[in-house]
Image (cartoon, rainbow, N blue to C red; front, side, top):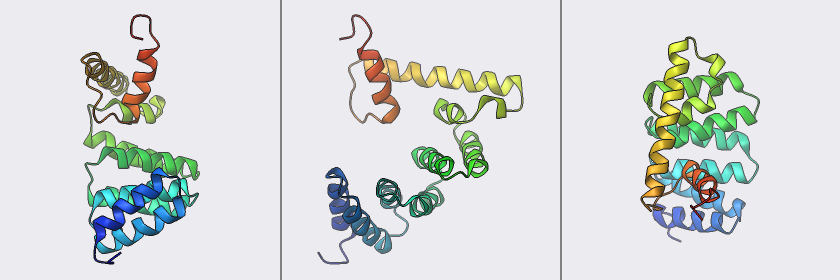
Amino acid sequence: LDPKLSLAHFNLGRAYGQLKRWKEAVKELQTATRQEPNNRAYAYDLGIACQESGNTAQAIEALSDCVEIDPLYLDAHVTLADLLVFAGKDDIAIQILKNAAGLFPEDGIVYEKLDLSDLQSDGARQRAMDAAKARYSKILRQLAAGDRSNLGKDERRVLALWAGRPGNG
């Protein structure tokens, strides 16, 4: 492949990832990321491939880059926080989630990741619970309407639970 074709390297990296060939995926995604260092998708997928290949430190670095490239990319914040917890860096993970909560005050997934006792007030706890309820109500409405396009991890999890309810086969 022409080393200047970052999209080709990115797509090849994703294809290797789908085949669970993580070392090859990392190599291709690194090439794509070097060629386009400000591409959030490249940085995010590199982080996931590094995580899957067992290189937590490199995954954290790639996902940190992704958050820096696009601070409004919620999945990057949440995945980065999960990896930081896995690496034993709970304090940094909590700070990442608190920052994300400020950026996404209505998104329940951020509050679910935070320990509710870590929130300072009863009002903050109530807002967290309200945001989580609103998020899952939105997901259930999407699924009930038959919209299965672009399902994320949370939507797939709710779908699995929802499909098991009587009458939802």
